Image 1: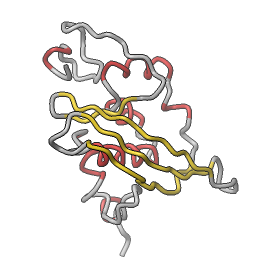
Image 2 (image 1 turned 60 degrees about the vertical axis):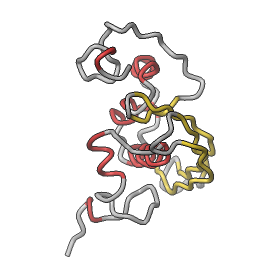
Image 3 (image 1 turned 30 degrees about the vertical axis):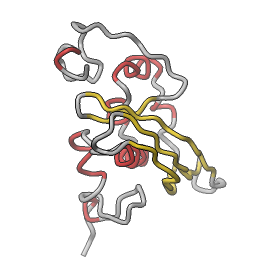
Image 4 (image 1 turned 45 degrees about the vertical axis):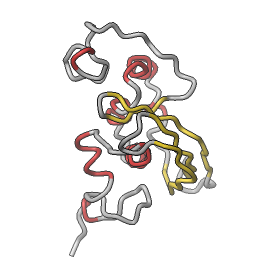
Length: 160
């Protein structure tokens, strides 16, 4: 019997099924902890789900990322493995946290395996965790401006 995508193991190496792990966050954007958001973002990279990557980036950084097409620059990367090395805060009751991780990847099928190691920062705004993109400026958003998450609501009624 063929295994469905939701029955297969999650790409984030949690040893859970996609449905029980990152699949639920990719559908509703609301991971309960910084680490789970990190894992779901890794999974989004493996699936080339760039809208999810943008939507889970800090709202004040989203417009600049869209303009620069930052995430679309690596659609051919072959992600191999995610290792969570350390977490600091970032639990359901926290408003900020960090996750140190190592992501292994190949640039092509026959190429060598490379590793990207980073200590990422996360911020919780209105009950939702967001990744803070390093070296990306924050864009000041007015309360009455459209929310950069793409909801169609004013920023003050959405992600502020």
